[in-house]
Image (cartoon, rainbow, N blue to C red):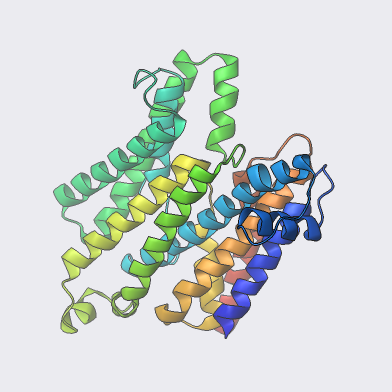
Length: 331
């Protein structure tokens, strides 16, 4: 019942968010355009409004929703596997690796034009994750080793990104890359929607199938092993899933912080700690949250859009402080 209510709220949020902007678009217009494109009706609609809704605002809203849901799920996985309430998708250095990959393509021209910023960031994210696994395996530090390897990887790739921008980028390149790195949903198309939604839906299904496993990991490796879970293999599979989810979403939308950190805590506060409830709750809350953050970022300083990563930080930091305060009062 709660899931159905969440889906209804999400659909309404997308509809209202699409109406926001300099061009006047109503919910009736949106309904007519959707029915026309789904082949369920042939209602006359102005071509300009059809293009605004179907080619611009709807793909953007759906990519925003996928990013919110996917990054939130990554936070759920990492906080359970690493038993660290402050873990989020960027704790493994994936975001820094993606940033370096994007800068390497945009500034240095690596890939000979075959890779765009998104392709470069995806490759960079995977390279960063591979480096984290190598460092963690060499250090043999278990969960703590993975976290420390992520910190080291983050610092390394952040330094390399800054070096490339400082040494090789002109002012226009620097401005474009930095705007992308702060998170941007400008120019989203249906290809981006298909990629992001497919990856997030697949990731959600894997998470739901692993809900009991994540419950066990929350109590430690020994408890998980006593329940017949292959700890090392399962952790590796779920970490790879997290890396692929984050790499895909960051490659499309840039670095978006605080989503994976805050939203799992909000879901647990509302629905308890069982992952069978936390996983769908986090996905739905994340989707709704990002739709509204993107809508606000789009209209706050119109016609100049505010990077969506700035919006998530402005909302996420106060929300996280409130969550920490409530947790302290409860304990």
